[in-house]
Image (tube, rainbow, N blue to C red):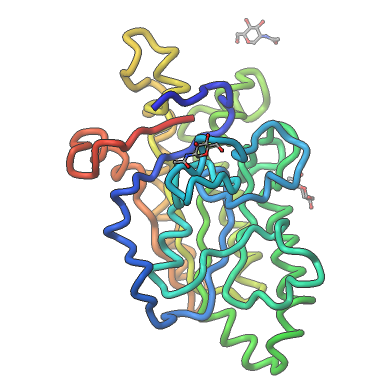
Length: 301
Ligand SMILES: *[C@@H]1O[C@H](CO)[C@@H](O)[C@H](O)[C@H]1NC(C)=O
Ligand SMILES: *[C@@H]1O[C@H](CO)[C@@H](O)[C@H](O)[C@H]1NC(C)=O
Ligand SMILES: *[C@@H]1O[C@H](CO)[C@@H](O)[C@H](O)[C@H]1NC(C)=O
């Protein structure tokens, strides 16, 4: 499949159609939790960027080729990991916040998606217009304060609803791709990879605490995948198709330190639960034995 590599600032993972075995949508399941709320970048954006002034949009063929051949704004041929998790939880795929008209947002009580391609944990990470994690949390605050109380009238019920829902964060790649690696002379980049990972994780945890303070308790947080293996990177490395291992090694401290950081948070924040999504090693497994995951699996950018 020929895929344009012009959009170098977004990292996306093609999720193969064969993944459908994970998600049998025809057997609609009973809801396991009330809602799934999604924060992140192009790995989970479901179309927010379609509403922003940016070139980082996935609204053209062949995006969505396995999503009823419909390009929704997902940086994927099919569903994103957020969609798959939603379906497994018996929930609808959370719609993009900016794609739901303001007057209808209060009607959506099964979760929303605030993710935005080309943004990251840091405000300074961006390419064109996008929703930084701060902005995403600002929108989530509006959902909690203004929209949800219109549908869930009792304060106690709303508290239970928020505490029982799942909060997925898939973010951080762009803080390397569009920040650390892109501006080697900026303040952040004077930090070595270990220190930069510590800094990013500190920034991430302060934002997770804000989501917690709004009532969230159950978090799923992703590591950062093998950025050095995305075609946008590997195509520029000698012996094309090979991963840029130097880049992978520089990003790895973040993924290595994340589980400990989440464990710390779980101890600090009463009644919280943290799960880390090990997409770093998952992507590695797929690369090593793609046949187990279907022939069409490709990592693109
Ligand atoms: C999918 O959509 C593209 C672009 O709109 C179109 O050219 C193509 O024929 C479609 N494929 C199928 C199988 O409908
Ligand atoms: C990032 O931007 C938000 C507004 O969107 C602001 O509240 C926050 O203080 C900024 N953070 C930093 C570190 O500049
Ligand atoms: C960036 O840093 C390198 C080496 O650290 C230096 O040679 C170069 O002049 C710097 N570039 C700018 C634009 O400051």
